[in-house]
Image (cartoon, rainbow, N blue to C red):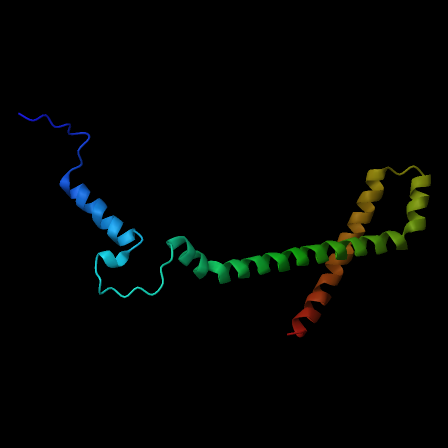
Length: 132
């Protein structure tokens, strides 16, 4: 009687599968079929990377344009606020002299800026629509 360690021995179907997989996926796919025309071998990772480069580039460019738009919007808001404060500089000084808190002055400035932007935004959007 011959003792066989069943855990160490692979079943025949797994051995055949491993051999077949090695022939197909291995370095020489023509070992399975010599008539098989092979022009260029690439890994699947490189095939996927090659197919996604345009989408990746587009997403990067859209992100850069969005960052530029946010930066321009922030600069525009800053300019509107600085113009508003410059126009009311003497008034702010008088209010501080009469004892106004920092919070009151800041609320006045932000409120005026928001009102000015809400008032002027439709005109800007109307002119931007005409650019098309």
